[in-house]
Image 1 (cartoon, rainbow, N blue to C red):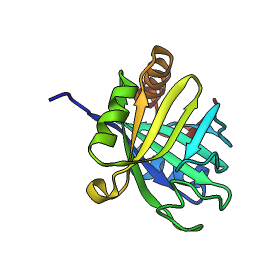
Image 2: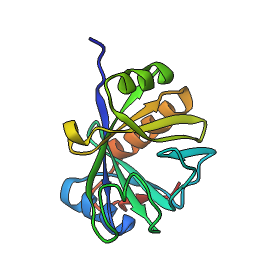
Image 3: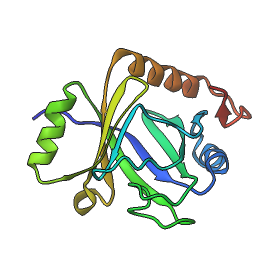
Length: 171
């Protein structure tokens, strides 16, 4: 069987910066890199082009990437599928794939609904509704060299982090 090692756990939060600082204080996670009001080049949510206004923060905790997500509006989204405005918590796990199309087909073949499909920053990503199995969504994320390099630099920043360093890193 092919290894589909999870590299990321993601959480919907009400305040991105406050959450990043809390994760940093509690676990030593970070520093977090913030992508405010992220936009995509191509986006589909459950067959529509509705794209919610979201910001992301990415930081490592050991080998695990923690993604924090803040939705700024009330648009339908994979986040609002699980949580009403003002609520939040665990949202999804993610793993990297080299053959994105084949993995999408595999998950569809297993009966999981494709909830969101997007292309941004020269990277394909898709979210499948796996709540019946995982309690959340599952993201498959393509692994082109530039994104692997970015993830590695965020991981190195975590390894070099010193007590007292800011929880949020300038992009």
